[in-house]
Length: 346
Image (cartoon, rainbow, N blue to C red; front, side):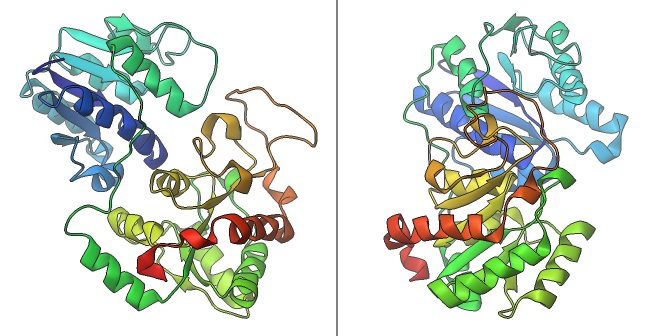
């Protein structure tokens, strides 16, 4: 690994980018002289930019069509890479990996390599039974002889961001409860009237300041409007803020309540207590990693079911989660985690 130049291909999805961070921190910890260049789409690139273990970010803007692939190839060729680690098995990532000049391209085994991804890699990790996505990415470290432990995301806040964080907390008030109300897939969303009930209870029972968070899609804005109309205590909203600002908000939050989406994993990486609402995806595979399982609201499994780890989706499950289920987990937070409220938010 000494002096090696490594390219990382994991281009999209905020949650996946968070899962890759412990891989790059482990690589850099194992061999500080290695150079890590990461191919990322603009959204996750804005989250990762400035990370101490990432030496360079190659932005892949898929809106540019064929031009995006040509620009990625030129940028990767300029890196003189010794190794490409392809952590993403979809077609666009496969093409970027194929275009990257490198003698070794490490990817998934044939069974897990979708879209003929195995054709563009020169070496593949061994097959493995299904496990959490984070542990699945650690299989690449095992193949390279790099220890994954201790698991470290180093997501921030980074030097120079604390002043902005203090200004944010001063503006929003506190103690903060961040509510991540949006997700990319409609099967992951939760009814606005239940969010409104949770907002009111957070104020009335625990004296928290609820703040709506997420993207600025039409669906999220519609949910925001309905919550505002229904809640007796109108929450604050930071929908659509830059991802680094969301990091600062999550880090300053006494409590996070989140759908199955990227900010849930960001909260885990920041070690902030998160009540996770999951029904579409198997939480054993993509739920909070190693932390806050006692705060998980699991609508994926049926009562008494010990569902195996799998990629299977389940539909219509989020409607099973009621406001009382979430507030029961907030009771657990108050009993176990409330004393860990960040100093910046006390």
